[in-house]
Image (cartoon, rainbow, N blue to C red):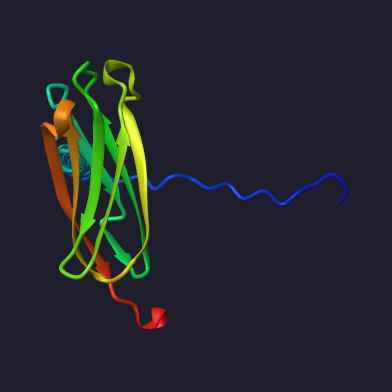
Length: 154
């Protein structure tokens, strides 16, 4: 017939009152567990060494890469008139690469970005060194990154 449409009415499943309460309790408990796990995950993955009282923090991405790898290193430096340069080093048993840039004391940008391209396979210690006048080390931090040798790179 013109103007008529097929209509399907879907009604929610009605559980007995006792079953609904048990189901609601299970759902509430599951939600509490998820919230607790999420909160713990946020606390565990918060960047270490990046607190407001720290003079230097480092972040490297990725933590694990395939060779030849591109590592992006971002440093965060507390503003201070003594800051003269920052050096970033990527070093393994068989490979070394480093870069240093000057800083203009408390006028320097808080964050700097370094890129290390085409790193061969190995376990790398990536370190940042904040230097003052006369190459004096003001702060140092670092972490470990793994570059996996790839059969495709050969």
